[in-house]
Image 1 (cartoon, rainbow, N blue to C red):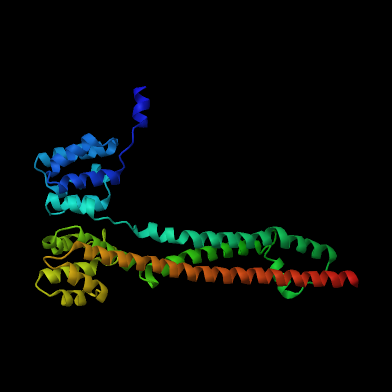
Image 2 (spheres, rainbow, N blue to C red):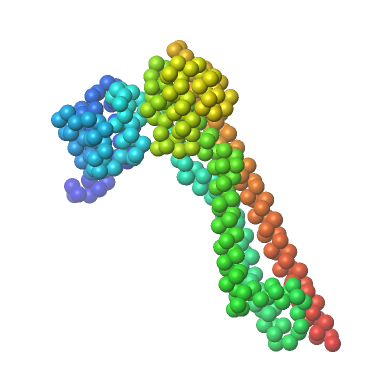
Length: 333
């Protein structure tokens, strides 16, 4: 009875546990006490063990960076461990953990955008393959039995059907085309339309919005690493260091290679009395740009897929028409 009740007890997922930890730290609890609280409240064994162990090590006077580099802490993501080990106050760590929401995973969002075009391409290609597996082999057998001389194009197409030497070429070509479509989509989304850079820019603005105005540049210097900003970390780091070194925002942003859109929001968001909503609004605009980049890439992939499928179906229809004509003429003569 007790075991069944425990099994039905809701489990604390790592993201929920991190949000709880962030709230505790942001409320002013020291890290050891917050970790002990997390170890008590969490129902997931790995989180309880890691939180209790970190609280014990921190209470003994160990450095945060040393504690959260321990292999036992891998229950927390790399991003979370980096924040917990960062040389900033516990309260600021709490703000980053519970207020800085990186909602767009680098690969997950790209692959999510590719689901529909990949489904469309897969259905189209399997439809084309079914013609080469079930339809054209029947015509090949008929023509072989009648010993009819085939037109060159029809003979080549029938040579690609299942049961011939060219069938391996057909399968490999279909796999290559599907792979090329996937790579094309990833390239268009992440590189050609700049979705990876846009994602980093919007997460940078969200990070700045999550912390007090007087801490934003310091946080930007510490957090501008590939773990948080895979594409733009060099530019963000240069901008933050130049600005912290005395350069004005425009000069620092220009030297770092940031565009005018980001520069404009940084001008509004890095002043002493800046409204955090300004940075959040900039991030929302960039998120809309990201969605637009995905939509444009998907449109191109769909057009390419339709053209390719039309070419295949048209070629098969032409070959079948030739075959029917040859069979009819052969039967007449």
